Amino acid sequence: MQSRLDKSPVATWWWTIDRWFLAAFLSLMGLGIVLSFAASPAVAQRIGLDSFHFATRQIIFTIPALGVMLAVSFLESRQIRRMALAMLCIMLVLMVAVLYIGVEVKGARRWVSLAGVSIQPSEFLKPAFVVICAWLFAEHKRQPDIPGNLFAMLLLALVISLLVAQPDFGQTMLVLGTWGVMFFMAGLPWLWIIALGAAGIGGVFAAYTVFPHVAGRIDRFMTGEGDTFQVDMGRDALINGGWFGVGPGEGTVKRVIPDSHADFVYSVAGEEFGLIMCFFIMTIFAFIVLRGLSTALKEQDDFTRYAVGGLVTVFGLQSVINMAVNLQLMPAKGMTLPFISYGGSSQIAIAISMGMVLALTRKRPEKRKQLGFAPSQRAMPAE
Image (cartoon, rainbow, N blue to C red; front, side, top):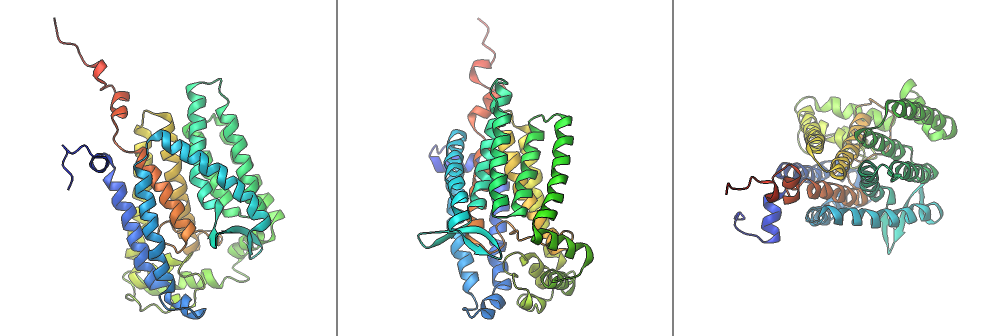
């Protein structure tokens, strides 16, 4: 335990960090490792790999993810903005590159290989996009003559265009939803809310018309006809687990789910550990989102408020989409469950996002000044 008298960077970090956030993130990382041992052996054996291939790689991914999250949490607000700007520029270049040299999987190009390592640029683009948009909204509010809102709209249009070109409809909706929440926090007029809502509905209809795979998923969800094997098995796994589960390693339905270690790990948690575990996981995600939004609303600095609100929103929306697909509450969409699903790009990108949240919510002296506790504002002694 660090002493409060210790002024070293680590001690200062420990006493200023939001330890509730930190505990929640560590809990999800731990659950991710535990559930990888439950969900991945059947998948590995099916494709001829060692039983614990994916579980071992999950641990390998989690270690640097933890290191990245803690390292980012040491940064100052200005350093977060600079880091986000650099990430945004690099990932926009990679998003363009992936359209030409990316690996095509099921008709979509979302991955690019660099030095033998596969990277999904859209995962790293999200936190950078959120932070830069937060900065643009904050600058416009600080100085209305700065066209920050306009630049944020142009950046949104660029990002959406690149995502649609891959195509990645799920990430498109995720980015759009998060941007809308941030714009609302920045004082979005009601006329804009109506216009953006109409544009969103129009976009869904356009995607249904233009992209056959989107139409197919929506049709299968609405009618129950066609190839619904994976989502049906995910539902059956949850039903088979009941309230308390069949026990670790005893699940049977999970063995036939193709993506049980990735998009359907939530169903595996339900089968082996029961709905109690599902509710527990859901509670951790809800706690992070609600605490993040509550903290954001208390922030005096506009940039911090928008950035924290946006980062926890994209984190929460992604988890809701994953769990809703597992529960057959929305059309199937390949979306990882943050910190729990298997995936290197997802783990590192989410670690960066949550490291930013930890950094921006630290109890810093400048925040006390904003709240009126600066030394210059204290009452002067009587002469």
